[in-house]
Length: 54
Image 1 (tube, rainbow, N blue to C red):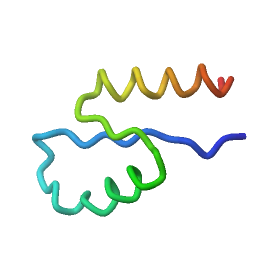
Image 2: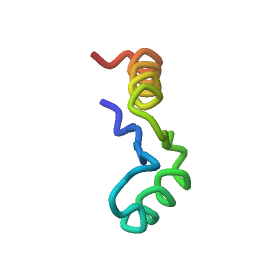
Image 3: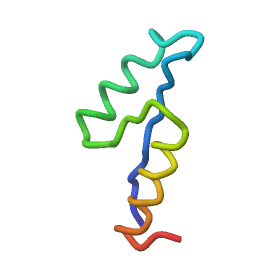
Image 4: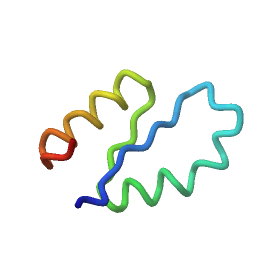
């Protein structure tokens, strides 16, 4: 089982300052950080396909 994930931070987030640390940690660990739902979905599907997760 993988512990991989994808983070989505939209530009219109009500309080983006709260997510700075989450984004920092995600990038530090190589987790994709996306800004749209479409990009987040594509990244999650690509990750699931690459790891064989269903």
